Amino acid sequence: MRVLYFAWLRERVGFAEEEVTPPAEVATVGSLIAWLRGRGENYEAAFVRPEVVRAAVNQVHAKHDRPIAPGDEIALFPPVTGG
Image 1: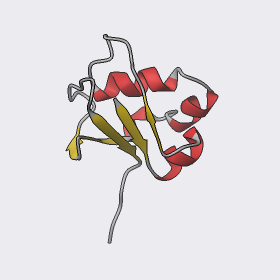
Image 2: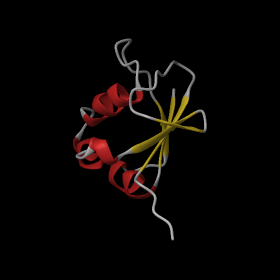
Image 3: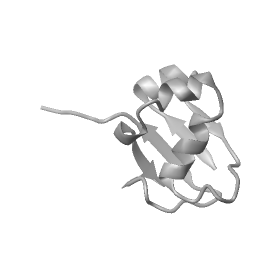
Image 4: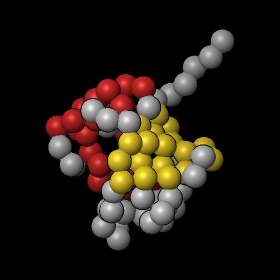
């Protein structure tokens, strides 16, 4: 599974993307974020407020309850504002 990090998530994690193999019980975007958060201080800092993190699965915006699968591309980014 490829995970992409954008904006301040990238800054806090320390890199723009990585390949991960989460355990089988990580089956949704939200559970992926929770699993990532437990991987170290940099991840904890990035996901201290997981409810504000937005996601896209295979380039389609997704909510935290969206199922994920091996081989998916998951993009994680902060809220976007415009004007």
